[in-house]
Length: 121
Image (tube, rainbow, N blue to C red; front, side):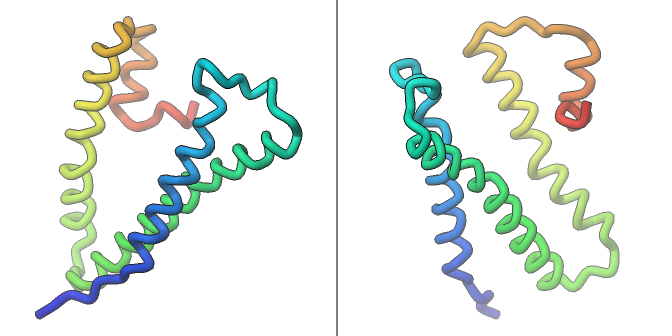
């Protein structure tokens, strides 16, 4: 059975990536956000919507995936997601720490990151 491909999903992901990139432009060393005019600030701050758009598109694709599998057991669905996301998240922490020579700040911060609770506190 051929699965239906939603092309607009890839388009929305591309828009989200562009918006996130747009938001980070003024934060490069050669451009300071404080030196921009009001309209320029508003233009670059519009990029903050890229993250929200990416979350919405991701939720949509997750629901499609759940629907296509027509699973009654949500545990298996979430378990697959965990094994898909957690290894790359931990690898990203390790790589980021070594690239920027970061020292662990404290045990609380480490535990919060490992448990995905770092942004809640």
